[in-house]
Image (cartoon, rainbow, N blue to C red; front, top):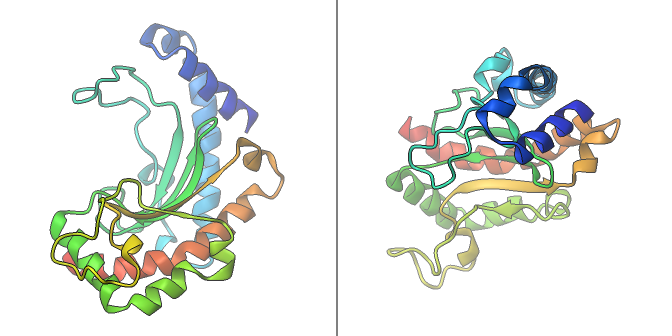
Length: 219
């Protein structure tokens, strides 16, 4: 784990191709160790979600090179390692499990990302139609104790066309339906971090199942 964090801190401070070329061995070492973490997480998640069993590690990882074509940040490399464990693939609308290691910004999450507008609308209507069920998922004591964050960006008000008097407007305002928990770097240096990470993802599974129940109608 130390090699992973050391490399990510170094690339954040030296994010250019020439530095990377001379430290490629450090990258390959860190990448191999993160790949082993991803393999372990697939196995652990598979104990409570059999749909991920058999996934190949390579199908859960992202390229380390950034796509800078439409970004003001022209840094060529990412500053994190992430594994998105999704039984239908990284590009599917179907939601999956995500583990993100980035010094100072580590995260454990589940969810469906970049949903088309009609699917996003359908998820919101599912919440309206099963408000008590969704609220019970979000307020389950063990999950609530983690203080998870719902979504990443938000509308200022309830979206157009939805009831203005909906009892839980905070559930309709997110533009993404993911659920995340930030953890300190020290989390990954504990001997039982993998077990604890899997436990967190297991607690988030009812949320993921709720979202996927609607999203899968559009796949």
